[in-house]
Image (cartoon, rainbow, N blue to C red; front, side, top):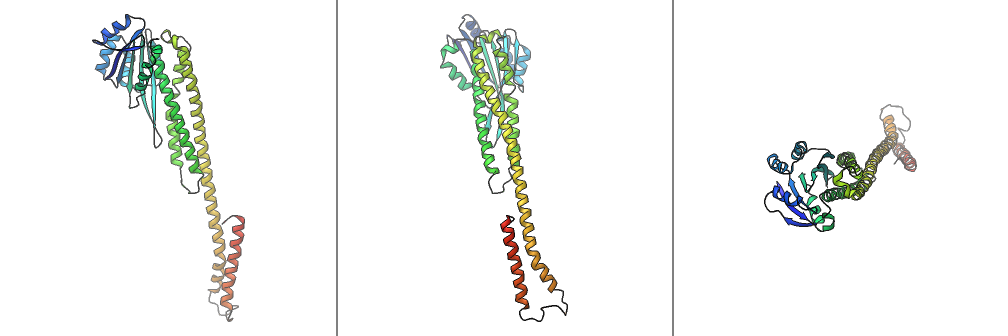
Length: 322
């Protein structure tokens, strides 16, 4: 559905009078005017009306209608079609990806949003608060959309880093908690995030090259967004490596704890072997055995058992097995 449609002239918003065709005619009549149509999960028949009035390429319209596209840039002569992935990060660790399709042409911009993430409302407010930038044409809106989305990527990268630090703390606590599943979950979400942000780099590289006439005017601004995205991409690479290191450390800690448990069990088994052996010998019920007739035989046997156990306990305690 159409969530917003406005005419911008000289960087200032004007409400659209009449249908889209009349608004486009009014926009093309002035060099500093264009219309901005915002759509959310548009139905095919709804997009068909818009595409006919603006002369959009049918392949791009099909992509924008049904979604599920990778980030990409397609140049259809007078119209530029850009697909960008939006991302939100929820707790527990989960990346939810959406899509924004942007059509940029002479005198118009169309933004079609799929998914719950909505970075377009702040983009429109930000652009309307800067009439000088907005007056530079439709490609300024594309810059604003890309800049806002890359900024949201930065927030997500920071949240992921916080979760990695929290996982590290849990790994090195002494409560014996197994966090292997949580580590793999976070690693999977980082990989999913990469599928959204990483393919955007070639799109920005193409815009920065200055080969697209519609966007030449904002080449420097697109370069700034590209630099920002490159830093985020490096962060995500580092995060992925950190999660791998956390998993390695966690497995090492689990192995050490298992070894400690085995040593403790072995130590106690050795301690209990002494009284078990003595009691087993005196439990064989032979008639002629030493000390059976002694009055001090029973306390002597108990004392021997206790002394041997205490001696072994002190030895194992000193060596760190207990």
